Length: 176
Image (cartoon, rainbow, N blue to C red; front, side):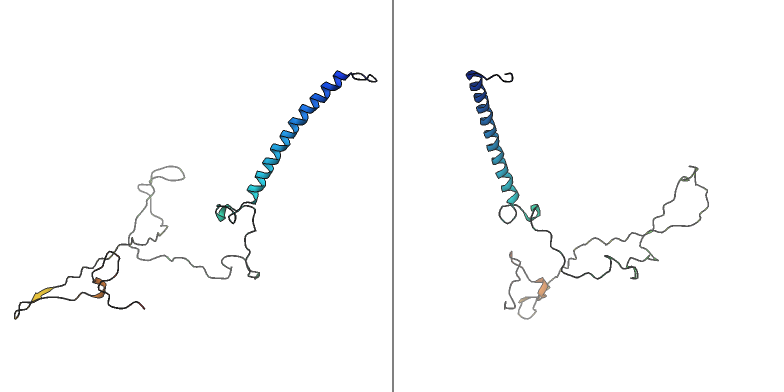
């Protein structure tokens, strides 16, 4: 279509039809975007209070609670003038393991006949493994020489028979 020339009826009809197709496509896209926006708003609004999400998954909720204590002017951690607290070196350790270098770290020469100039001590403190202590109580049974009756010694409280429930049997004190 040139300038000053009126379009024909067929050209206008084709233009209207093309615009109608484009308008239908745009309306479909707008509807899809509205659905996506609604889904994103729903997801953004869900938190541990209104869904099955755990509290750790809350993203855009309230900020983390702040401390109600006032500022003291001190830095966090150990203060510069405070004494340190660490394990001291033990003079008589339970075990000593000697580690001797085999080659010089500078030139790589062997150190078999090299002179000893000192030692660096590093101690590792381990707790002993926890092991249950089992005490067997043997209740002696004695027969009376006079009547022949067999008497068994009385068990201490911690060695009484236990039911499957774990309760002491017989019960000696009431639960109050």
